[in-house]
Length: 183
Image (cartoon, rainbow, N blue to C red; front, top):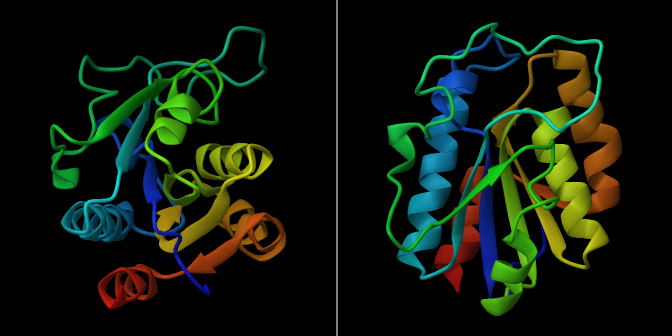
């Protein structure tokens, strides 16, 4: 990673009660901890934090049934470790990416955001789709590689090594916080 724009937003994907408990390639507790560290740093520097959850799938047929079977009432609630703040933007999506059918793009543009740092679960689905959407909309993209995981280790690795370098820059939580603190 080379730089962070003056108005960079953190976008955290699907760190919610119903998803963080599912089996993942890397411990979701580490992902949550790193995402929370990023959120605290962005807030400390007065930068936007966007917390995204998913509340169901897009309409249309799919061959795969919903993972996890019947969903409990708190399935879509964000994990408390993220310390949701009144200043945070929250987005509820019904597709893989956070852009379609939401006000995310308009909200970020209203704030003058030119770059997004993306983290969350799943790397190859929600994170990658959101990063692709950001790239398509002209945002500079950074992927927080230690603040994401996937249910499939091969899919996670494919996103990290083949897809993300074409969408933007990659960095660790420590590197991102270091750049924030050096400003």
